[in-house]
Length: 160
Image (cartoon, rainbow, N blue to C red):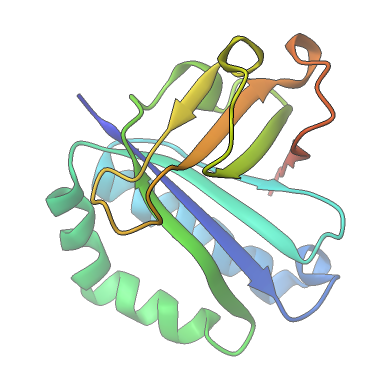
């Protein structure tokens, strides 16, 4: 089974997507990480648009750790450092694909911190495969048109 990488990136500027240098860095990240992992990398945002979500797949946590330690990724982290803070990062016990395959322009996302979940409302519910997050914390995703819940945020796919 593959795993899903989910990262929340907080940019220091609300107009980061209109800055050519940052767009170029995001394209470089998407291209090089995708080539390394063999999985596409998708970006989503929400209002306020200072937050960007990265969703991608990996064969395993060790495969992702190899990328994290690579010279190219370390260079990218240094280039991004003045512009962004990683505010959440998790390897989810969710097969990459389906709702998380980037096919939809919009997703509903909700991070449940241990409360009750109506599982019928969510197409994908994942937990931290490494056990680093708070016990009971779940990451929930659904198609926007399939969930009338007011829970969660609407994420819009970013085209670079």
